[in-house]
Length: 93
Image 1 (cartoon, rainbow, N blue to C red):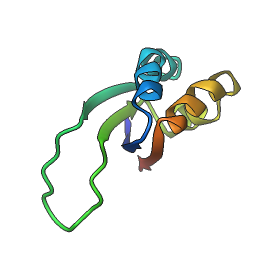
Image 2: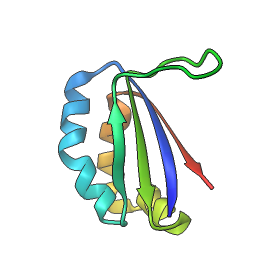
Image 3: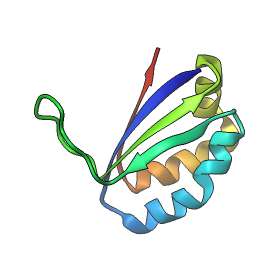
């Protein structure tokens, strides 16, 4: 199991709402899922720029995460997420 941390700074809430409608199915296609997502945070250390939304994603392995990112059938889904605002996703491991 590998995890990814998504850091989203939302400037287009309508696009985010549309993305949420399709994100779960897109993740599931490659064995991924949202483990946790929230708009509420507590900084434990440092002074990070706080996102509007943060999510912890899981995938069976690194190859599955990369397949989700690079799936040509999901280009529109990823574009929709990016159109909602800033979108940084870090794969851990």
